[in-house]
Length: 539
Ligand code: CA
Image 1 (spheres, rainbow, N blue to C red):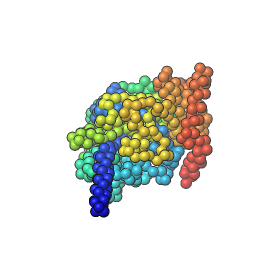
Image 2 (image 1 turned 60 degrees about the vertical axis):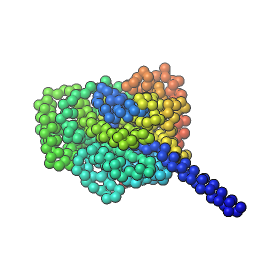
Image 3 (image 1 turned 120 degrees about the vertical axis):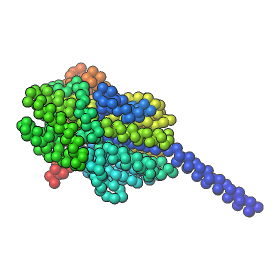
């Protein structure tokens, strides 16, 4: 009898554990892989799924064709490292501590790759992190130090320290990514793979194979290229990111330093020529020969044209020159994305994989006469977001919710069936992926800090709703601006003092105060970060 009970016990216990093992196996098998593709400074206007008029990105567009295109995705702080900190932690900049490119990240904040790794995900990162720290929570990585270089770049590798690689940065990052997928991926585990491009970040050096094609192209000018900033406050007027007056002639527009001297063109910044000599100086003799041939022709033409150019002609020329190189670098990104998408598909890895394409913020492509980012205004505030997840997201769908880079961490943890830490501030996008767009945020909070600093965009915070945008510029000014997003799509007229908007203004003020409270931002914190900035500057 005793033996019988014991046998029954053993059978029951084995059955129970066997069942648990099977359940765990099923759970593991259904957890999705995540491929997170992010480029640096890639404006949504430069993806043909958003805007076919400017350029053609057939491979990036495939993600939207197979998944969802987000038409109102936006950031919380439009600048590189702070945005990356927001993405990794799911928290606003005033919590991560990485409020601008110079401030240190508060390493007590846990990142979602650390959580995924601790929960059985295999994790890898290739490309540009630009974060100041080696990535935590990654089984394998090869990342660019700081901004990294376009030609023959160094990479910080997990196993062999810093190494220099021969080739073009975008192609190298793609090669590393594909090599990991082919040879290092553990088929027993779900994976999180971060494939992070440096392009199209300044100084916009295209791959050799794209030199001639893009130097010949011309592009449609934005409506606001010749904006004079009337109708807006000091912040727009005093920003230093105008294509004509602030862009570098050598480093950005690739006028050879000796030709600048010949034509009597002064440097826009003291590092202009030095910067050009550095980035081009990294090329090997073969690469340099092709560069000199292609860009030499452009320089020759410029020497002929420059003496006859009016200021207006110069602005038009600088826009075209900017677009040729900026979009030229995106051509290689699109090819790389195509290679990775092909590999995933050919190997059945697209079946249960969330594939994301995004940027760390938006970017001005000549709108308001600007390049760069930083402002709460649409071109820099909005960011591209395309997501494919076969079997979950309906192919060819579009979404207009105000999703933010703040939401990635929670979304990925939710998709992996992991409970997120309660101090993460974003929202999971899983309901939206499944077509449920209700009960999502109706207002986004934004806060930019890097002032005084490069490009001199003043500190500001604000609230963005579907219809309006209320902004407070502070530090050395105290100006409020209000924009009607429906009537004034280009954000040309500040209506803060227009009596017709008095009620809207009052409601938005209340809503902004509530959002600041919700996210634990405050005037005390603004002051604390100003004090800290002064301390850092003083060192
Ligand atoms: Ca960036």
